[in-house]
Amino acid sequence: MVAGRGHELLAVLGRIDGPGGFAVVETDDPALLARDTAIFSTFFAMTVYPVLDVQEAARIGGEALEFLRSA
Image 1: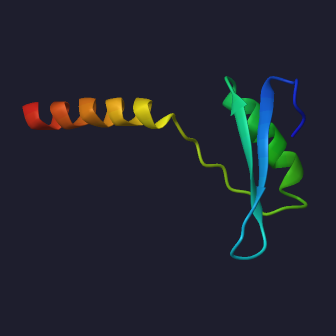
Image 2: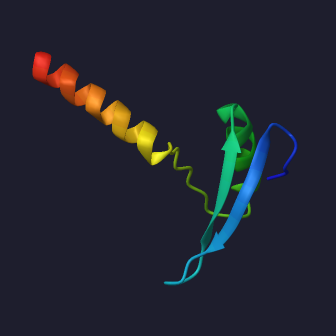
């Protein structure tokens, strides 16, 4: 994944429990990640895990809980 083309490579991490690793990428355009994984999945097994900042995820979880309580 190339930084500067709509997404930023924040970190490349290796797993300590065996082979493999993670690329931490930030983007506003998930289609760019789809493009890169389509290209590079020929060479690597890839999985994309969309994530949010933990505070944002907690806020959304709280909103979902309130919605479920009101239903």
